[in-house]
Length: 297
Image 1 (cartoon, rainbow, N blue to C red):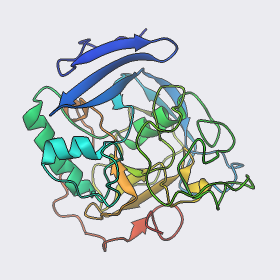
Image 2: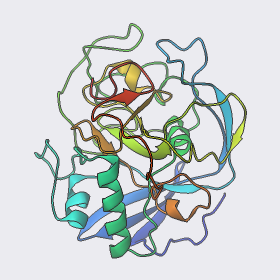
Image 3: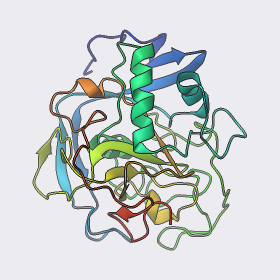
């Protein structure tokens, strides 16, 4: 297999290999543990085909190749981990410490990443690029969802009153659920669809139909990418290819993030330390990309 180097990583408190899924390593901070999955290099089709139901025009289908693997958290960042690093919890849904942290802007997340690097110097805390996120979400699939042609509330936390493409209606929880409480995809990643939107490292930009290798996204831009959909969204917004973006200072109780160690060491990445100086700031809550209204709609 394509083995990461070094393995185990220097920040790991535990590590191993799961049959049919692959390598994992765990980080512990202040008694809180987060597991990460090794995502092997490979090739996939990013975006959606023209005949995918309820797609958006910015989901341009193109081939992406990753020459290097990467680590990705198997869940969104929890409130417990945020509390352990930052000493406070900004979330609205505080009924369980293993709920995903929400009410965090992209800028808030940068402060968290910097603080985490102070605590764990070898971690190189970052966010996945948009292409990395979709590659990991799809987990080898090309269907609208990693679970297939459609989803149910038993698989994904979304508004079950608004199913995708004529699917059956189901439960609408009206809140987040604890991480890893719903089924994982084939690569061991939980809640890549629904629960909370997840910030990516990239600025938002148009996708090209040309093949891309190790894409990092635009180096500059006023908007940051969000992926995955949330508990308040309809089924279509939870598709693997669905893209949203908003200003880096925007906070909402449907927005969280997922850690990707080692990202700020990758040369040329428009990643979590990208400089926004001189960019025009959008109005809070305003969105670009995807359906009008943005992730807070």
